Length: 137
Image 1 (cartoon, one colour):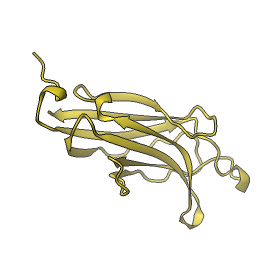
Image 2 (cartoon, rainbow, N blue to C red; image 1 turned 60 degrees about the horizontal axis):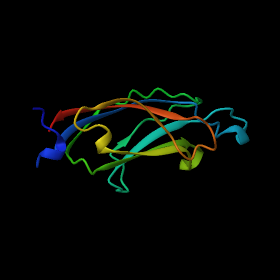
Image 3 (cartoon, one colour; image 1 turned 120 degrees about the vertical axis):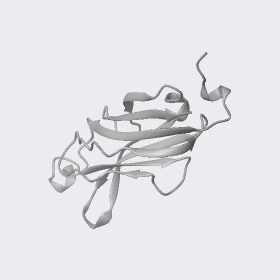
Image 4 (cartoon, rainbow, N blue to C red; image 1 turned 45 degrees about the vertical axis):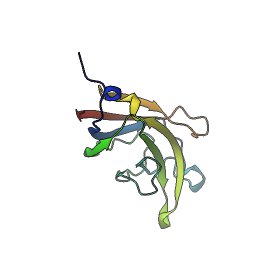
């Protein structure tokens, strides 16, 4: 019988990779830019400091970050991950391009690879692609 996270007192060791996003809105349109300068941040369990921050990809609505994977230990099935895609503006300001929340139950115990729809996109069909590998339960 396979061990599930619900049956175990153990916490999981996972590896999260942020791959890309698609169909983002043009946040720089008012500036005559015609695109966005997106980056992604991931927060764990509502903490203010992100556990992942990708690089900014300039002038695109479909960034491919292929961000190096982050290993995170002690993940429980009740944990949440808040994912935001933001537009970087000169002077350090940011505009929200979309966000979503993924509960650990989505990837425990078998992992996840695919797309998640972003909310708060101003009606754009924006998605983020990511991969979560479960290394240990």
